[in-house]
Length: 471
Image 1 (cartoon, helix red, strand yellow):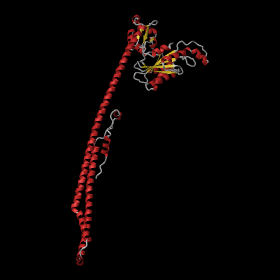
Image 2: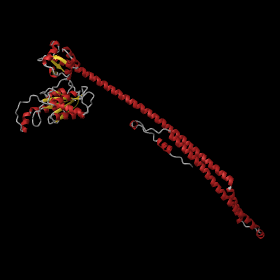
Image 3: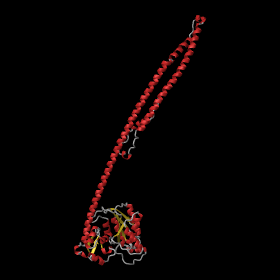
Image 4: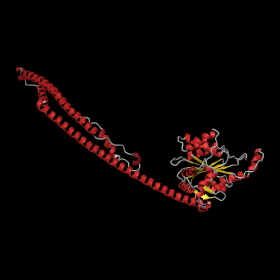
C-alpha cells in the first residue's frame, strides 16, 4: 500500500475535473467507481458544488456552532491523496472503499466531506480521495500537518493486517521515528539513481531508467519531474548528501542542455499517453486472450459433453439390447415350461388311464343300478353280476387314487424342474446386468438447454428392472 499526498489546492471543480475524467480528455473511462462520504449525493458534478459552498460558508458555520472566527483565513480548502495497491493485488470495490474509510479514520478526518475516485488506468489498483478541509457542521479546518506520518503508519498497519509487507523501508523509517529520530521521506527512484551514479550524466541516465527526467528549474539549478508531472527538488530525496555535494557531482551537466520543466512535463505527458496506449492494448490483448480461453473452455466442455452423451447412449443401447435378449429368453423359457407341462399331462393320461377307469366305474355303476329278469333273480345271476361290479368299482377307485397321487408327484417334479431353470435364468440375467457399466448421470446444467428424455423409455426401464417370476 502506497499513500501519496497531492499538493493542497483551492479549486474543487479543478480537482473533480482531473480525478473524474481521463487525462487531458473529457471522457471518464479510467474511473472505475466513485464513493461519497458525508455528502447527500454521489454525483461528482453536484458533490464539488456542495463542497465548494461548504468551504465558502466556513465563517457562518463557525458562528452557528458558537466558535470564534479567529486565526488566519484558510487559503487551501482541497486536500487530496491517493492509495495504491501493489501490482498483482486485486482488491474488490468493497475492499478499496473500506481502505478509504480506514485511512480517513487514521487522518482524523472522518467527519469531513469526502469524495473518492477509483481509477483503472494503471497496472496497480488505486483510489484518489478528495477532502473538504472545512467541517460541514463546525467549520473547523482539517489540519494536514502530520498527514504523511499518519498515512505511513496506517499503510504499514494495513499491510501487516493483510499478511504481506511490500515496503520494508517504510517499516524501518517508522521504527526510527518511533524512537524519536528524524527521518525524511526519499523518493526511491531518485535515491537509487544517486547511489548508482558518479557524475551528472549517469545520474540523469539512471533517472531516465526509472521514468524520471532531470530538468533545469526556474529558481533551482536542477529539478526532477516524475512520471505524473510532479516537480520535486532532488536534494530533498537524497540521504546523507548536502547541496554542495550534489552540485559537485552534477557539475558536468550544462543546464542549458537539459529540458525545461514544461518540456519535461510535456515529455512525461507523451510517455503517459504511450503507457496508456500500451496498457489499453495489453488490456485488449488480455480480453482477447480471456475470450479465446472462454471459447476454448466452452468448446472443451461441448466436446466432453458430446463424448459423455455418446458414451451414455452406447451404454443405454447396451442396456436395451440386454433387456430385449432377457425378454426373449424369458418368453422361450415360458414356452418350454408350457410344453413340458403339456407333455407331462399327456404322459399321465397315457400311463395311468384315469379317464378310462372313470368310464369303467360309470359302466359298473350302471350294472349295479340295472334290474335283471325274474329268472336271473331266481338263479342268483343278478346278484353275482352286482357283486362283480362292486368289486370292480372298488378296484378301479383304488387304481384312480394311486394314479392321481403319482400324477401329482410327477406334476410337482416337472414344476420343480421348471422353477430351477427359471431361477438359473434369473441369476444369469442378473449377473449379465451387473456386468454392464452403470448408466452415467446426465449433465443437467447443459441438458436443461436440450431435449428432455424420451418418456417411452421410462416404461422400458420399468420392464427392464422387473424380476422374472417362473410360471
